[in-house]
Image (cartoon, rainbow, N blue to C red):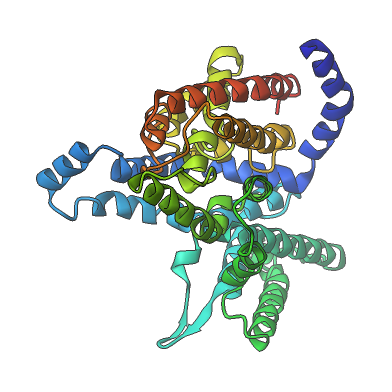
Length: 420
């Protein structure tokens, strides 16, 4: 059965995936995420240091370094994850321009400036940069700006090169190159400034925030049921695949729908009543998002046991510690999963299947409903016991991880065959 599936994937899926994988813009995006991988790893370690889910550890660190001990890691976070959109707009533009054999540094600098023009907003003290939106929340806008600005730059530079023949000896080659770049640079800044004015005319001061609002509002009225859960899981992971921070986008929806549901469960237990709700926030955190979005702890196990790729195995070693605590940005951006056509199916399909398996395990009474909140970084096996008060919660996590391994395995092998 598995061999038949593998042949089908190789005959039907691999050619399409290979064609998509060689697309210039997708390659630029992929390489950009790979290039910021060291920063992603350091940033995730900083998050782990601050949120290690053991009370004794937290108390010890506060005793040793004082109540502000988390500031050290917060500074590191501020220079890595907190400015991820800035890093990615520069990196994508650099890689894309380089693929056109056009000056990548200047293209990246122009795109960086265009991104600032796009997101800058008016404040009481004048124009300000919304720092809180420069993390993964701004990745979609960063990707679009990088591609648009770079394409305009490349096209205009090609036109100039065709129409202008530099005169030998009039200026040094480097000055000549940057002199000709003035025209496309001015044009790009004019275009993005006009776009910003148009946004403002419609009352949009923060385009990133507006995109989030448009995405979140249609989902706010959804009820707590299986269909809603599957929709939220699918949308969140599809956003992740596009490079958006799906978790952050849907967080208001998740908080609005699933924290009250957990509170109802806790009150029912306190009053010796039947626990009403299957879907709660810890349901997703502990049974579906093990290792982070996409249940990537299963992917890491597959890589560890079956991969022949040294790069992937090295990445697994670097990411495994963070993944145990449900931090998986290094694997999302380092493998990468983001914008990878090979991993699209398992990355989205796995959490959907695990949502179903967890739902039916609880519905049939094999596993108790969730009755406790634990930190999102609590490792699997431990969190399953804590949120249900039963060892069957841990057994369900083990079962789900195994299902994830079965789903990811053929795609890891396919990725290695086409050298994804």
